[in-house]
Length: 166
Image (cartoon, rainbow, N blue to C red; front, side, top):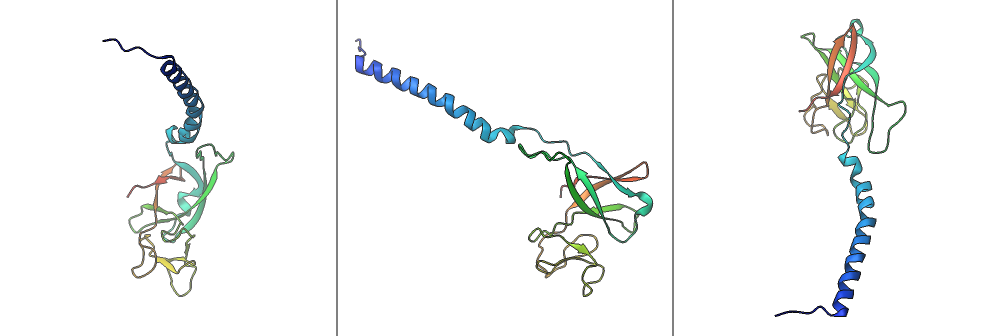
């Protein structure tokens, strides 16, 4: 039993195949453009040297700025991105670096900025409060503690690394 292909079926298959081939040729670059940033590997997140020396570290948090190289998809600022951390030495002599970003709505927290809440980090947006170690004060808006950066001391200088994974 032999089934013959009509001219109409041949033309339908040929035009459909050609249209599919051309469509895939047009769609592939668009799909690649959309998912390309996801496929690229990010930076290893190494440590960045700050201007603060080990001798300047005290048990009272101080703000220190540092610049990190950022590449987010196609966005890459030429001078890097400036970030801030609250840095101090705890009672055991360990260096602690906390992110100043409130876990409630992303506002910036400050140390000892509200006279009503002494020796605490305070977020002015919605009265979020954190203890010195970065844990949130119960009954205040933030539900999570402040993020902590990894730290190192090298050649007498403070180095700040990526955020610690909790």
